[in-house]
Image 1: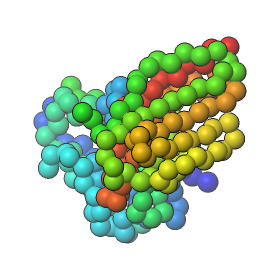
Image 2: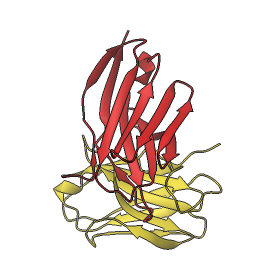
Image 3: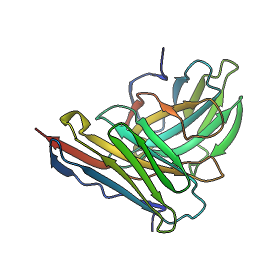
Image 4: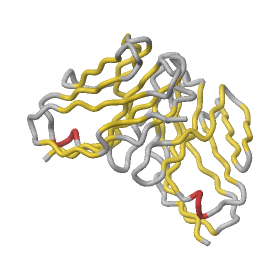
Length: 113
Length: 110
């Protein structure tokens, strides 16, 4: 069975640019959550989408936005990139709205220069 | 004070040792407690979760939750070099927004 897939795996962007990260959940999972993991820290929750609606939002600026498509895949957009946005961006999927049995993808490593 | 505190380590143990990993928390609304394992440059992998207080066992892994002390533990029996990874605790209350610890780096040497 395919797990959570994220693309791209690595990305280098320049300050001020915009980036779009993509996530495909496990088949049958309707919830997708996005996390930012800075080196040496645990993942920080950014967004959760369930059935194409935003169900939760973490403490991130409006430069961060996301959406979920009818096939439950999701995109995370970050505008006006800052050096501090450099991190591993993780996507997790789960069947319901809870995160207790969430499965993570391998992540997208974003470097902002 | 952070909502979830976790010692980053590293914790170095010999193969076969019993490992104890811990987290403390301050938010009494947390009801779900998860443990993840994360290998270098990989996404976290769910090991197990518990609801409220008590113990849960899965193979060599045992999770304990003491809500009165706001303290959770993960025990690994007969540790193996392949257990070397970062272990993350995570907690969730009614908001569906999980809060992660910073992770403890575990090294099991042969």
